[in-house]
Image 1: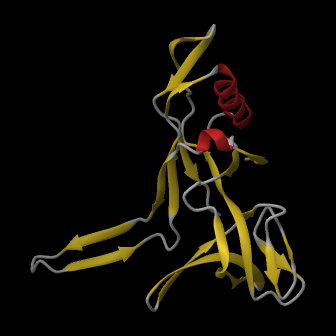
Image 2 (image 1 turned 90 degrees about the horizontal axis):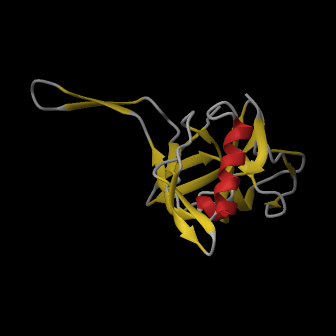
Image 3 (image 1 turned 60 degrees about the vertical axis):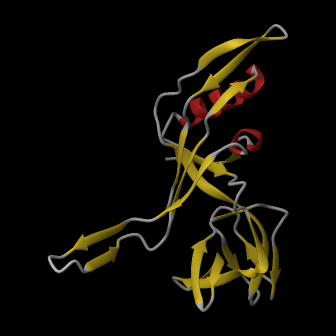
Length: 189
């Protein structure tokens, strides 16, 4: 699998539906009590980039991306417009195999959840305590990093091997094209 350094067209991802999901097995025993087993410690995001109408230039961008990725084969950067940045109070580091991994910390009361950030956006990252980020992994080397702020993308791939368009109409002599669904899923690991 190839990991493209290119970002899926932001003007198309801006209309995406989706967000984080977990996998939890829930077993209800005969007493009615529940036993819960969290099988995914990290959320996996899913998106659907469905648009009712696009001009040919936008449709060509999606078609090019899909062809270069060979459908589900290769992955890319994806901007989740609902969650793409961290403030200095949210941008933390956790030790992973002795390395400083960037995370975004979500907090509710005394509870926290650390989301691994593996695709920071070049030119937007500020690190307190110094260090150099790897923009393909989110690992920071050197310095004594304590916090970070900036933007990040989600590492994704298409979740379909077919791309189906519909010709909707003509607008100013150009075809207006739509697609019902373009599923995109986060790649972890």
